[in-house]
Length: 119
Image (cartoon, rainbow, N blue to C red):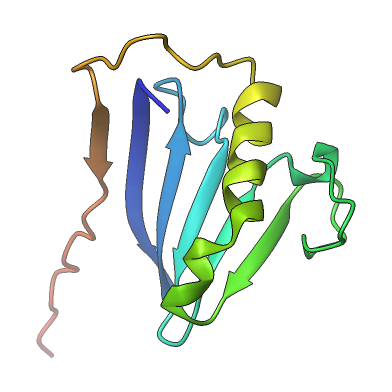
C-alpha cells in the first residue's frame, strides 16, 4: 500500500499501529495492528463491509472487524492478504503499476512525562 501513512502509539496494555493512504490516518484508517503481550489483532476499521464467506472476521460493531493472531505462523494465512486487498480497494485505492520510492510516512506519538510533584 504505497503511499502509506503509519501512526504508532501506546494505548493502555497494547501498542497500536494505524495504516492509511492519506495523512488523515485516524479518520481514513484502512487497517490497524494491536500488539498485546500474548497476541496480535489485525483490525479493519470498515470491516463490516468486507466479504467474509468463511466467517473469520470477529466483532459485532457497526463498522470494525478484527482477526486475532496467536502465533507467528498465522501470518501465512492467505485470507489475511485477501482481506487487506479488499480493505484497500473499498477505500478507493488502486495498486500502483510501478513500485515507488515514496514508501511509508511514519509518525510516532511519544508519551510525555508527567511532572513529578514532591510534597
